[in-house]
Length: 256
Ligand SMILES: [Zn+2]
Image 1 (cartoon, rainbow, N blue to C red):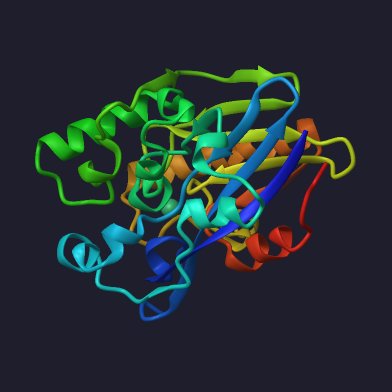
Image 2 (cartoon, rainbow, N blue to C red):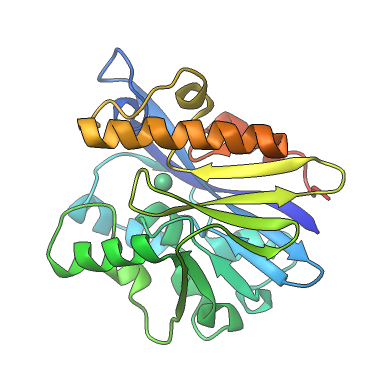
């Protein structure tokens, strides 16, 4: 198995909405990223797809957030930089269907991978409920309700191969897929996605500053579970939107 971290650009976002902090004005560069996995039995697998460049041209400002967006790399461009096209992918995994993770889905229309889009069942239900009842929020229907797409869903921990496992986290959304990757030479990597936005959030047990009590309780329970998984697999944790960490891991190139 070969693994690569692909940074896909992001948005300056109020930090307190992701990680509790003193200064409500403090901004955090919320970098989106994907994991490209070239696997001997599963083929080419992509975890998350970043932002939609089309969506960012004005629509986000209109419907969602009006924060500066920087350095957006469309997923097809990130794949091209490593010599691949969307048509080369066999399977997509989405940590969840928020706009900064599902934004690149349209690039896979008509491909093999478009028929194998794996997501947590609870997140797909939440996304569908959200966009069909007019909720304002980070699920954007035009990004994932696409002609010809076929979702596959899981409810609980699922190993796609002996070195690639997915687990369902009930924090941030009702179902966020974390991933466990056991590489031969770079140890085990565990992606949390947005249940833990940054290393600081994990290390200092800091939920989003805007979290209601039930959301905060879910954060703490999930963090304890991630801690236990990290210990069990002696894993390095990769957090949802920790720009410095993503850049450092992307800089290592191919992890095998
Ligand atoms: Zn996110």
